[in-house]
Image (tube, rainbow, N blue to C red; front, side, top):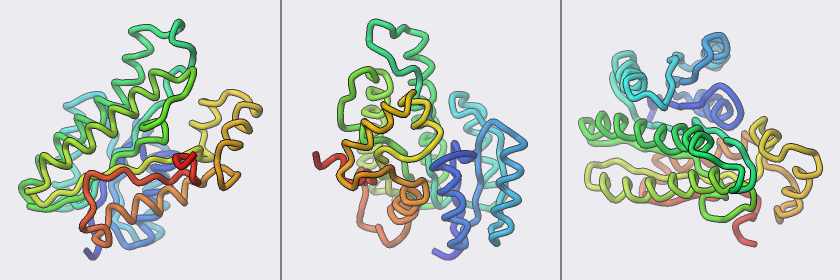
Length: 248
């Protein structure tokens, strides 16, 4: 599709930002969503410099009213929604299970799981009326593996993958594809916060067969592919972009 309309949540940093740039470079009209106005406006200017008809929407994916408005504003501005990338996420508070609480659970699941669920609810609402659309949810290798000291984050990403596959089956007859991309260790601010120390980061890299961190741009390329018509017969799939980590 020429000049598709793409909505990306959590678009202001890391993988979300790289995806916005990648779609803009391919001629897409991009709506970037996040919670920081100044950063959002700066990103929009950058995307417009690449030739994209870009817009920023301030939205918190934990709030259904804001999610509904985010999707509706996209459609009002551009007339449709072709691709949605649900990237907003948090690493939460990595620590042993004995240090977790209802508060740490809610802080992680409200963004990583509820945010994806609410976003898909309203994206599907619009895409069903169109009879077409592609949704990509960002998971993690921890969406299908375990990790000591990260039970809440891991649980949230397992939930994302289960929701992705279930909704893919639910909407397949409506002309909507739903897939996920599962990054491995990627050189982002979130990874630095998640690992905590250079030693922990190095230990994580040692588990990657390609022996390095991934780049946000590499994960973005996977997102663009699976969202595109080139992947038109793929739905309900989790695409690993992890340097071979899941093959261990």
